[in-house]
Amino acid sequence: MSQPCGHVIDLDALNDDDASDMDVSQHSVMDVDEMDVEEPDIPQHVGPGPDTLPGIMQAFRWPYLAAQALGRHMLPAQLQRSCLTRTWRVSTHFSGLGSAELALQLLEHAAAGLTGGVGPQFNLVSACEKQPSRQRVLRTRLPQDCHIFDDIMERFRDLPELSETVDWRGIWSRMPDAFLGQGIAARCRQHLHSQCRLAAPPDLDISGSPCQVWSSMGSRGGSQDNRIVLFLAWAYLIRTGECKIIIHENVSGFKEGILLELLSDTFEVVTLEVHPWHCGFRIIARPRKYSVLFRRRNIEVVSDVHEVYRQLSQSLADWQKQPDLEEFLLTSEQGLLQEENQARASKKLTDKQRGYLQKYQEQGAVRQTRNVVYDLSQNPEKRPIQTSQQTGSLPCLRSGSLLWMPDRRRWLVDAELAALMGFPSSEPLKNLYGVPDIFCPARSQVGTAMHVGCVGLVALVALACARDRS
Image (tube, rainbow, N blue to C red):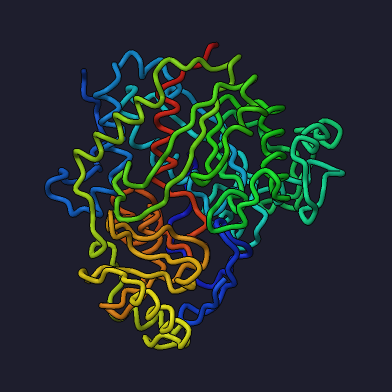
């Protein structure tokens, strides 16, 4: 995989243009309104053994620990015949911050020892992201020869506007007439003249379709929500394209029955319930539903995807010391002051946020630990979002989340939120991952992303459990 040039990326100034889980206006950080045989060779740069690393560093070793677990649970001959030994042309849709691309980059290094250094290799051919702020992130992160297309709907005509109420089966029946073709030129934000016809057809796609349709924090309109047309457009591209393996991500409330109705005659579909703690990040809640699609005429599924995933996630849980929140507090006092100055605010809460905090406490929120966190972007009388009293995990990040630690009188800032989502947002994490730059997306961006460890673990399992029929 081509790698971007090494430098620190400063995305603080970017403003998000919509929300992944809900719609929240972007404001100052201090002023926000509601709204898991033979052991394989593992690369030497893994670093010290698990017992000598703090929990956060163990969590960020997930690619190497997962590869090691896979080598213990599957025979070398199985792995050498699997889809881990080939080169993949990769596309993503609704690409966000490039979590999937980063995860694949990490898997290249970690999985090489499993198959004698043969593979896998991932060539990024295209991304698709409509929001300009995320396009800017992708242009910074992705190789120069990777196309960044603007809008999935540009490949269709005469479909309902997003403002209309929809009958999704009716829209699907109109797709053949509305589809302009796989080779149609689309606006590319990476290359000259904003036009590209040169993108190679992908054979692996990883996409997280819009989740407001299904999210408890969004409209939850389900199949009647007008935004389902975006999912239908993606599904038609997948059905008529050449992708052999597809990984689809959405919230736990996603109804995979629609996916099965549209694509199960062409693809074998396996659905996984995935949590960050499966890859070492028990500290944060982000339950997601991943569906892995294998094109029947091209790909043979030779191992039980559910069982291999269970074995790997269990191995990671057994080997890793789960980090606590203390280890993710990466920002120095000076850094906190700089952030506050940049936000033109002080440590003091606004009147509205103080009111929200009082309401949390009146509702009996537990404060027996210094690490309790409240999301003060939301009115607790409508959407209480706080540290889980059962598991101690942080609330799921969303666009616009403002996580406040009352006993420390400080916010969780950009670098810390990014680390919770698996991004290398500090020098030690960058060095452990073996990536060329520190990646610290702005607060307004990180809540919209896939968790890097989750999508990476699913991709590793999917490729290990399948082989090419050719």
